[in-house]
Structure formats: structure tokens, C-alpha cells
Image 1 (cartoon, helix red, strand yellow):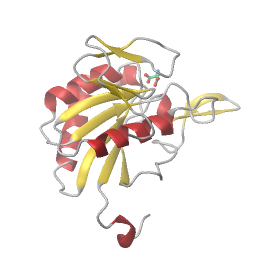
Image 2 (cartoon, protein in one colour; image 1 turned 90 degrees about the vertical axis):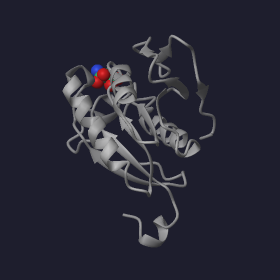
Image 3 (spheres, protein in one colour; image 1 turned 90 degrees about the horizontal axis):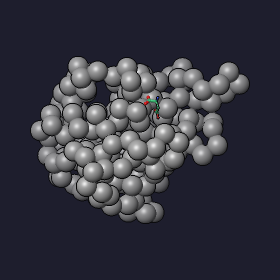
Image 4 (cartoon, rainbow, N blue to C red; image 1 turned 30 degrees about the horizontal axis):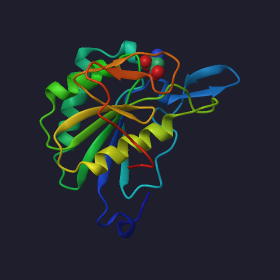
Length: 188
Ligand code: ASP
């Protein structure tokens, strides 16, 4: 837990964990949800303070419209705090686009929200969860006061309106009908 001195003046980012591969752990018995839900670690190399909120621990095909509407309400309520600069949503990738679109249509906060996930669980070769979380956080920090929702996977940024899952194995698993909005390079 950072001290008051360490957090002073640094923007706060909320990390809403909903489940999916990014909340899973590879071990001797295969890939399983972690006992303690949520992300395995929070970025330490960005100028921000993170607060994790474990919203659920569900694979994305088990998420429903009701879950997403509750998530939108929880995000909107927490983004009201002036010290909060934005939110990252960690989600299973199968229905990540549906979550992103619902948030785009429902959120009213004038702050950025980025939805991400991972194609590999913690402990698997190529674990991409922390990198994707860092990238999503970097997008929030780069767009203060931006009322919009983005999806980010494999360093690629997409509009929440048009993103779809196009690949079930590649780290860059998303695409969009109107193409790529941008890329995160070295946390920029
Ligand atoms: N089946 C998982 C889900 O969508 C896959 C993933 O997270 O990538 O929850």
C-alpha cells in the first residue's frame, strides 16, 4: 500500500477485474482461476496509483448484459472522484468487444476507460496480462478528460464501437471494422 507521500499528485487509475484468462493461473493442474480473483500484479513503472476492484471472476461467456450494466454503473460512480483519472477493465477476451460496446453506450463520465484481457494466463509462456494492463493504463494517462472507451490487446488500440475478436491464439487478438486507432509503443 503506497504512503500518502508516494500517492500525492499522482493520478489514480481504477482497475476493475471481471475474470477471464487474465485472472487465471497456469499450474500443475492446468489453467485455473486464481484463488484470489483479479490481476497477478499491478504496474510499477507508470506514474500513477492503482486501485484494484474485483467486480467478478467469470469467464467472459458467463458475463451477461445485466453484469455489464452493473459494471458500467460501478465505473461511473467511481469515476466521480476528482483524483481518479480513468479506469481499466480486465475481461475475458471472447466477449471483450461486447463489454466494451456496452460501456461505450452507457458510461457518462468524462474520463477514459480501456478494456483489456490476456491470451495467456499467468505462469504460461508468453503471459501478456501485465503488458496489456500497462498499455491500457498508459492510454488512460495519455488522454486525461477524454470521454471514450477503447479496447487494447497486443499493443493495438481499437474503438469500443467497432472492435471484434478476430483470432483465438494471437496476442493481437482483436480487429475492428474501421481499423486500428493506434498502437502503444514503450508505454506511449
Ligand atoms: N475464455 C476466456 C474468456 O473469454 C478467454 C480469454 O479470456 O481470453 O473469458
